[in-house]
Length: 90
Length: 222
Image 1 (spheres, rainbow over the protein chains, first blue to last red):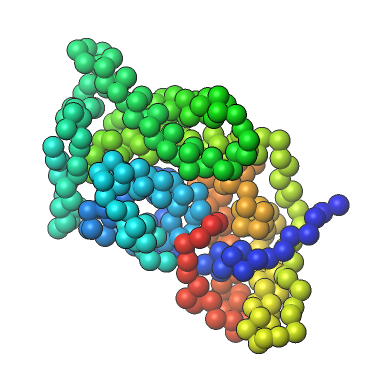
Image 2: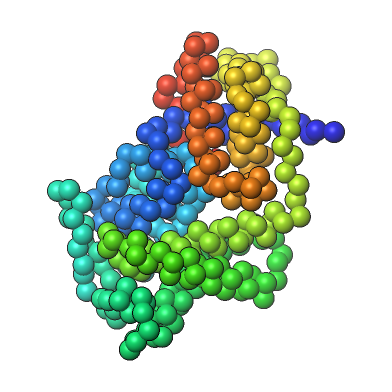
């Protein structure tokens, strides 16, 4: 017997998300450290595709948030603004 | 201590801790003076990052005892160490070595925690989501229910069977992508590509049907 799966508003938003331009999870991992350091330095995203990917991939976004918070703690920086910019403001 | 990397016209200054070696790569690459100490210090960094990630995910582990949590942290750091040492040559100095190293443990710890949480859980891979029951009012709720019904129909009608299974598992059942990749014998990359292509199809279908999804952007869960 298959169970009922209801489409929540968040699921609806995720299903119809515009996650262009394309970036793979492997490339996201490759760029992640540089992206986080640039944001903490106030230098902006490493690329528009990185923001799009982090908006569309929950796993990579969680990793990016976690890395950003750890590096910010090491450097005694306030992470709030960088967290907001993590996925290009999306 | 600082180091710099150039990306086109923009220069970003890395911050290294005062006692961080300048020559991590040389020290880690081959046996010699300082090699063992560099390995020890690298493992400490990875433990720190793994602990940070597991702590952030701790609430998902329920009442798992602290000894088992500690085991997950050490297991993550050990796996990350192997992975990182195999990729030393790919370090380009575009961030500090510490930040580059941290990401290996952050990723691995997330994989280990999700693997633990889902180890005895089934992942149903059939069925199509259903829209919520339409409300009588107000108008915005009716419009949302209308869009939900359209998305549900599009999932059923325009996605391939594989896209439907992946989208349902990742977005509706919220199965972690690495757990799903393990169960299906594929990779995170491949599943994200499937999700991406499915989104493009859904958006195209909905736009053709007159729904406004052009600016549907966001940064929440998958």
